[in-house]
Image (cartoon, rainbow, N blue to C red; front, side, top):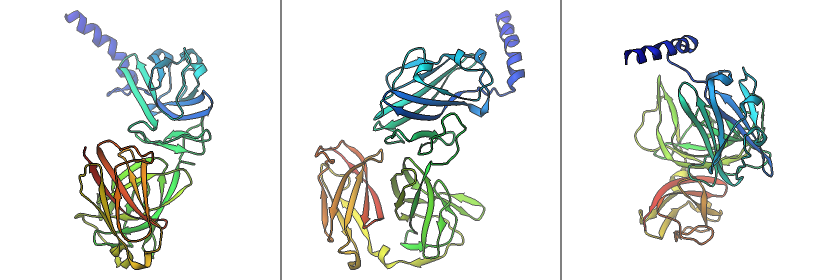
Length: 353
């Protein structure tokens, strides 16, 4: 037994000497993915901590979809590579991806630490952060945990943020419906606050729900809660939506001014939770009475499943069905009140059957 332990110590000494302690494995990671039409696709792969690739460190690297996987022909990849592109022809057996919905998987079978996994979900599958992927777009990794939709693919070159953002604008309100015109707030990027109380900011192109917003108060970074924002942003697009902070929080150096319109707009639903149907009660000022209005209903994935249109102030009923007339499943749903082109209020509700 002692002889066995000694053998392992002798084996690992050169490994620690080479990589240091703790061990950092050069994990193969998804960098960018793009459809080229039909069954053709490109998968750009890079390595964690920008470690170069050496064939003798890996048993294999495999690319997978929701149904299975195939090994990459490692002999096609030169040692010391940091970024390389894989196609179906680079695999031991061909592999295709469903353009409507699938999972891109990457398995690194590292000789010293076993299997390391990376993946991204797109399309209509649960937990997807990318809805659809036109041929001219790519899925691009921007940091350790986030993938976004990109309209400026850079397959074969190091990623940047070009073509990965849309724009968000609207008004920022505190819990008393007063406009906030000063402070440091952020979502993906800091919000630019304007003198009229409006804000604008860049936002990464993806499906996302925000329940808090970043705020710098003095030397402290806090995340005040907000009415849930359900967004699905495309590169270069502009979305108008107001942000409403609520609950108790600390804000330093904030100036506020009243907005009569915002104070007069409200929406809630009852019953909540509900069984099959619920009623929305909407209040708007008379100045907006003839402006087209909609209530958008979203599922937990951020997908718009139903829109309810109305023009006058009234009680609006949702019968729990989607655009196809099919009754949706039990779970959490979100709603958003839109008047004209401005998104005013959001809320959540629970369907129980």
